[in-house]
Amino acid sequence: MSGLTASAFKKFKQNYLGLASLYFIVTVGFMSIFAYVFAPDNSQYANQMHLSIHSKSPGFEVSMLIEPQIPKPPQSVFSKLFFGDAYPAKETPILNHRTEGQKMIYQPYSSGGVEGFEKFINLEIYPDARVEEKKFYLGTDKFGRDLLSRILVGARISFFIGFVAVSISLFLGLLMGSLAGYYGGKTDALIMWLINVTWSIPTLLLVIAITLALGKGYWQVFIAVGLTMWVEVARVVRGEVMGVKEQQYITAARALGFTDFRIIFRHILPNIMAPVIVISAANFAAAILIESGLSFLGIGAQPPMSSWGAMIKAHYGDIILGKAFLALIPGLCIMTLVMAFMLIGNALRDALDVKA
Image (cartoon, rainbow, N blue to C red; front, top):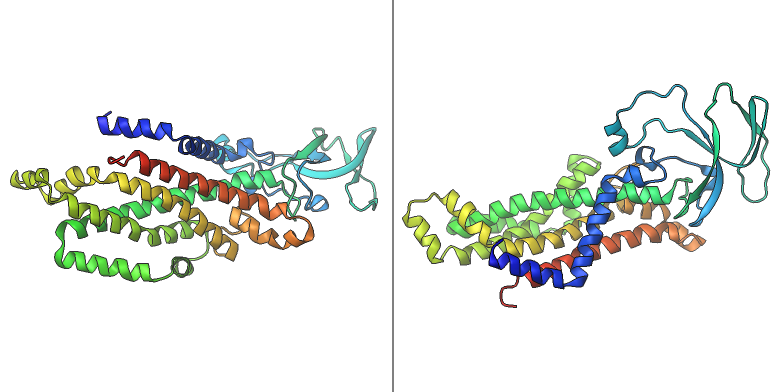
């Protein structure tokens, strides 16, 4: 580890907010990757619906009759681990149950004091049927789905769009910015014209236009957001390259006959990555906000896929109906994750500032 890198790392560790944000992001990222391991509802997209217990408050508990599928089709461990159980057991909220011979008689859950008719299942056909107490730690949404599970699975969208959008913006921004800054002249004028035109269009409007051209879906949103964020990276890279290319070691590299490609990618870009890393953290946060806005507008991830923005859209009307937690919980998740990335960006800026 070089002296500059060691010094930057030491200063970053001394920034407690930045360090805590890093731990928080790593923890949330790990939990989002293995969401179906941590989620109480491990069905695909955490989409187990129980309409009889919709919009229940955090901490709600109920007896759940679980009927495994017979026979259950095969599913690989990898698929179940990362994409959820494609064939989950049937779950029925119940008020009470009793066993009479080979029959389990139960009364389905109903709220408001209304008692439903008793039903039964044949234990000879469903020998593994059982009743378990189930707790919904963050409550249930308007379809009776476990809100905690939807939050964990929805975190994937926020993380993946950040990584994809930042990767696309870095690739295009580094390429276009380095070409403009290194060659100058007409190349610089053409790329700067493209940057200015892209920047003059409102980001959300441009993302919506690209998304509609590519079609609805979360992958289309990932690409659209990435294609709108590269201009900031390109401008920063262009300015840094214009300053570095006049240094003596670059002149020496030209005198030794090194190709422009080698000079740019081996000698210039490694020395200007500090501001690029800082802006990437800010872009990560911006990508999460844009995706949430698009999902709120119905252009992002489509049902039954879980997304924090879509969860707010589905429940923002419940704020005035005494169920504000349904919209506030995903909203707080977005705010906390974005704040964590912004704090990391600030910590990196301070750590990589050689003048400090």
